[in-house]
Amino acid sequence: MLATTPDLPPLITHLGKLHGRMSFAWNGEDNARGRICWHRTTDRAMRSESHFWTTVNYIHHNAVKHGHASKWTEWPWSSAHDYLRETGRDQAACIWRAYPLLEYGALWDD
Image 1 (cartoon, one colour):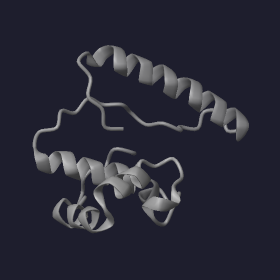
Image 2 (cartoon, rainbow, N blue to C red):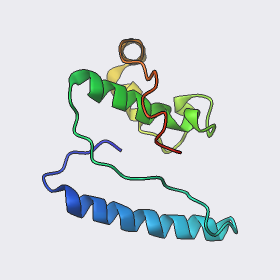
Image 3 (cartoon, helix red, strand yellow):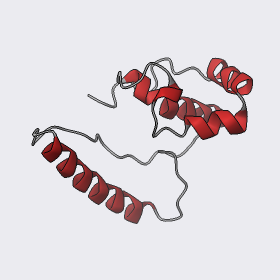
Image 4 (cartoon, rainbow, N blue to C red):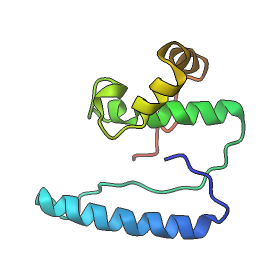
């Protein structure tokens, strides 16, 4: 999630509670108590235009990275559908090439 907030600590607190409730529910449905459904939340200020667009690419590519989909558009909960409609596929492809992931986020899910 990429968000703007004037007060970060309450947002992180609420996200932590949401993660806890969702993980508990999902793990119960899958009979997998203790499994990690969510990884860490971090505050990371966007440091440049490049950082912003690489983050947008990372967010849209995350379901593909984790094997939940083979294309951005196959993940039904992705904002990629709106992004591609608003940005256009050609422009999105230009942004993907201009701001590649490389090693961005490589160790986040460890």
